[in-house]
Image (cartoon, rainbow, N blue to C red; front, side, top):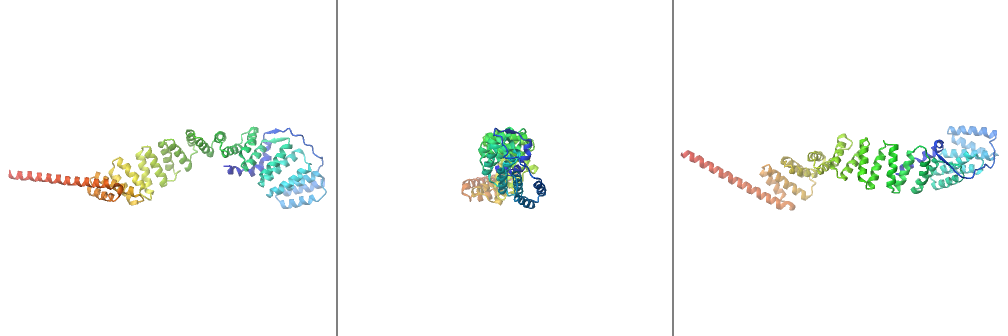
Length: 437
């Protein structure tokens, strides 16, 4: 989670000073800084300086650096030296040479010739340059030096400090300045709360994380990520009903629209023993095309409806799964449902499909032949039944049952034949008696 936040740091470094105009702040009790001198820039240096500024504005950094470097060879007062080093630092920063930039800025700071706003800003910029070069501890050290002398600290600066700790995965330390920044800010900042959430998540402080997510949802109620995270946090806290409730509210507001989200909602309903609602969610997702109609999804839906005792719906889903199946397992499952409903013809078709597709373990193959024989028997197809039962008798797990069924059917056949013969004999006898009379 922190990795996503990390991408925000470059933007922070660029925009922090500009944003501070609107920021909250605290006044420090540091001793008031006095400049070592009140020198100003000479007219000659100033004119050259203005031209070099124009080159920087036009992003002609090589020419600007060349001109600034040439100026350093001249006899300069402390203020001129500080200003030139400041701009050299900015040029280096613009070209991504942050470590070099920080050194130029330090030279400017060492002159002690800039006004307080410029001097303090330079110290903060030095820290930012070090952070831009991934020197986070050095950046923190430089920031600490800034804290010791500056007369005012902006809330954005505390946020920046928190970001440095976060980059170093020191999440506990990051929370201290981050909470201070949030407290000082006049307007809730979603990015700042997101970093605080990240810190709580990375330190497994899930209860605190849930409270921050409540705030984030209030700030940005249309962001699905927050709803999903809050549900997951409640689930981690073993507050299962709250976890589900969050997803239900999100669904009602159209934020459970992706496949993974609908699957998660369905699973939550299942987990809490509500298969009917789980089935409705999965069914709608398949119907709307949000969930891909794969074998697994149809099989899952069939299993859910089966557990909800919705057999018509279960069979519909299993039928869909059967069309996508590469083995006979799903057809074997369908056959059992048809057996329970005494739908012998459908059971027969499902069993034949299961056997034909294969992929069943030997025990189930034997059971499939046994059930097929029983279905044929129920449809009064004795020859077909015996044929299937003889196949079943080849499997150890159903051999006894298959032989018993075969003997039963054979006895039935003999009895039926005897009955037919007796009825025929009686009919012949009646006919003979009628002729005699």
